[in-house]
Length: 506
Ligand code: NAD
Image 1 (cartoon, rainbow, N blue to C red):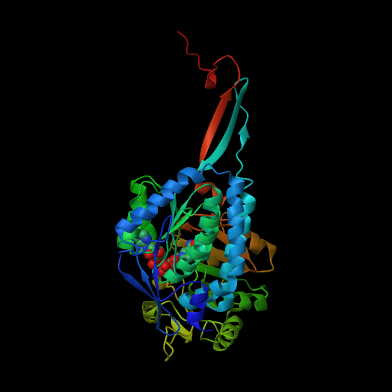
Image 2: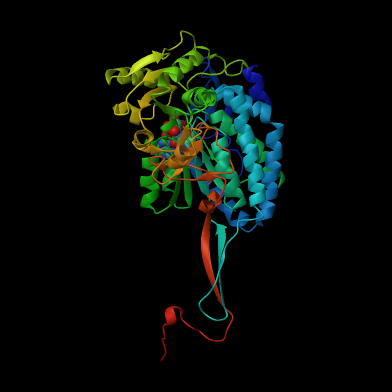
């Protein structure tokens, strides 16, 4: 596949403006950003970033549109998202290829990401006829109590490089049916994905007379990012990225008592019990640890192997690792593409050095490949749970293998990390599975049995505990974070009884 042809079909030239409010800004003044192909190190295209003044235009459009969009009936808002879902279906192949090209994940995963956007659109359409509030029984005669949900305001979406299109849609499509407008600040690693999505959605929005519902501001964290966080017009900031970024977002948005959804780093563990189906576990661990080159928030980073199966499972895993085809993510035979950039390669190599210093043993992989681009071999490291590095999220394909004797010990070690996103156990023993799922089991936002930690479906609420930030996105009742709750009491009597029996008369 020719990169320039993929870009051209998505309407992206050699140069693009990186800011869009009610209309694309002609000449954003925030400096130039080059997008690189991580498979070759070659530049793909140039983007003009938004300056602080450009951000002001974008935010003003989002605010102005919100004042009208909030009064547009929710099912009609859903209809616009339905059409966006159709447009995404039309562009699925090219957009999926662009995700692979710019981010480096293999094509099947790039396409999967666009499919996730389509699924989110469908989910949001259904939701647009729901957004239910509860009715409560009043203690006072002829009084009615209920709660209703209103749109919140413009929502800022800060997305990470590793899911350059899907993460935005989890937020944007739900926010839009809830009556909010969206200001998107994507990762500087993947500006072209954001521009392509904005172009596809904008065409639909424009046709429906609602161009300012989704806006875009590509820019530096220090200018555009910080402005977005501090902007009192932005009722909610949904931020996906590292824990370090999350602390900053929580601090700045917290200072103005704004709302946040934080979707931060993970350090996901899998426990493999002695009775587990090892074929199943092997396939799940491979996808979970090597998929997206170890650059998912839900990547498996630690496996706890019962000592009864540790030797056999380690041998089988080493064999499987030796067969992984690393290379061009657009080649259908490839299983693992490159890392995002040179710094990610250095982080991985440095992590492996530190793991060895702390007593770990690299038993497979872990070398940089001698070719252009940011290619590495995925690594297996025999480790102990008390090695400090095991508690860190290194955003690369390093998998720690830790042996344990009994389940309670494995669960204790599993939970003994700062992050709490996703977790899994492989077992055919009901008691072991239920122990893992109980209140003294996994402390993560996601807990799976006989499934790996990554590849969540959109129907459930997605997110994690502890340093992962506590946010929830996508399915279930995650929509409530994008609306404000109003409790209503209506008195249809001619008396004024007070609650709690209070008498107040003169
Ligand atoms: P990152 O923290 O470097 O960047 C994430 C985003 O935050 C980018 O858009 C970046 O520009 C922005 N940002 C950084 N500083 C900012 C500031 N001061 N103000 C406003 N915006 C700012 O993360 P990354 O390298 O792009 O992504 C990898 C990380 O994301 C990993 O830690 C991964 O686990 C996490 N992640 C979490 C989830 C989840 O749902 N929990 C999903 C995907 C990725």
